[in-house]
Image 1: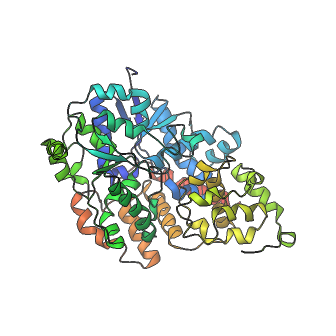
Image 2: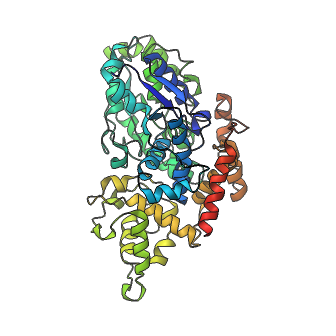
Image 3: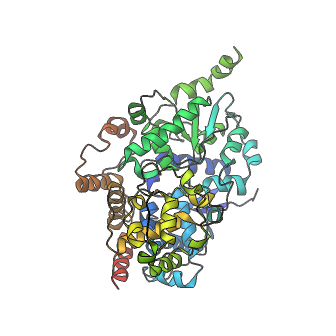
Length: 301
Length: 186
């Protein structure tokens, strides 16, 4: 483990709203592990998918303003919980190495941006910079008895040439972390299948179909819960789980955690610090059963 | 199966432009169909992604830029991750959308309206303001019942704010959009 882990932190817009518990739990675990995060001052939206569907220079200009702020903090690496922010920030740094593209982007900004910054996901720094074996040493409340599937979503590892992290079809980072925390991980066959992304508002039918398939599969393989690393995936599976049940005639009642929330529990952080009460599908019964060792008794019986 | 007479309608400029803007070699596609096989949205498409690739190779500008598929691709990157010839197919889809917008094939459907509402929110607030985005989307589509059922479940969680978060540099962000508009008009 690197002894001085010090990153600029880019929360992203959903961290201020629908994925506030991802932000809370990311900050809480980093603090508990001694990873220093400093917020990027006056950050703006990365433009997410909508910006890159309009133009690549517009998308990169929105990201470049943030990267420039990171560089002015005297830091060369930035961490974000959100895969969509991650993809946009990384794309901007990468593509702006090309002079022609760089000039095009700089024309849209108040001043030319310094984008020589490496951006990583919270998951990536935990695995690559902190180390799973070091996380394991800090576990005080193992997740014994919890049977969980890890769902990565589509863009955390893709496009692979850009993201340079884990496997494009069969990522294992979250599976390995959950195992290190003492949970039982069931291999989730749809770990990189799309949940329907931002179509929840304009084309809810598509999300009902795609996210419905994810929940059906999770249930079939015996998962008690799913862990996610993406605000959009989590929102589709959690906030829209009732809608999915109504649309598909199913009866799912599956808690959808951010992996940072379960990691925090194992590190001994409180449910409140981890925003457990912000989840729409209540994890109450599951968390109580874990705390009382009831799952284990049930298994033994 | 659709038959296209490429002798009379091959647009070489279109092919060159897609290659230049995407940085991809269209000729590398040998129509294995793997992109379409893995595309989660293909059931919604009017022209599948592998057919978009073929029509683009064949310089069929009108057909390609009119396709609804362009506005239904969510950039999940499955096609890019799986292409045996390392073609960044998702980037080509992106570039085709850019061209369609620029050249007045305005695109149809609610996904594009949603994307535009999203960017409108970024332009005026510097960050996405979720409630404002939803209201803007509803005002453009008239779909006033959108997600109304989520209210009772989500509101008590304290995740939804009725005012945008304040950022100092929001004028700087607005200027990015304005300069982009000026540059595009050149």
